Image (cartoon, rainbow, N blue to C red; front, side, top):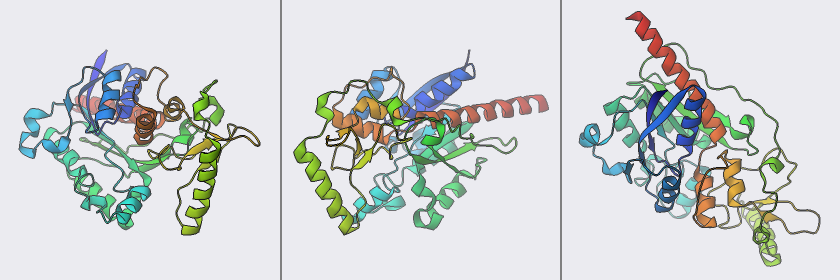
Length: 336
């Protein structure tokens, strides 16, 4: 089988890689990931559990532009779910409260796009797939996205980005994300995948016998209800959300889950305290396979799943990208 090589930047626990691997397999290809970058120790732990033999660069910012050619391996596709916190509504709000910079002005995370750009312009892979929060489209009235596209389009054909929702691709979770793809060679207009609109319910993603520890206590349930009322009066959006197993989708799974009451809580019946989703259920709602391994604490597992990409959506995008690359290669080969 033919190999398709990739690098996996800001990899988290490997959601983009899993998606590309599944897409490649469907097309009779093998994904050959040459390198991943991830700065978080716990995320790296989970990544290694599932992909134990991949070259690592912890902090991609440590690779100077002049060293990219020798340090970053050649690859066909660059994957990057670059940090969304500087552009997300929650992240911007938190940064404003802490009087911290956001967007590109956030020098810890906001300017990491330019590290991606340096690699693209130096290594020139055949294609790239970038993922971020939908708020990137409207952040600063679209000026940041315009700047990103302007830079990418110097060397790549980049169609207009697309916002796709996980619940439209067979996952019982409302999760809208923006996707930016690009190709070194142009061969006609690229089309993003069409939603499958497969009907699902939350129940399909739940454990049959969840441990009792995930049912919240009377004290915590009372605290959540009081906090929600208080936040509503203060004009703040965060608070628990009750989801019924028969619902078509949960709210967006957040990395804040199990931290401060901003939880998706599962309805268990009248006069019964709701329960939290288990870590396995949260990963399942993100489309991760049952074989996916993690041995971190619940707190870290929730954070990792909340920061991950929706596998079903990214897989469909990857299939479209791989087909476009193949079509382009054939066209140029025939032209020669």
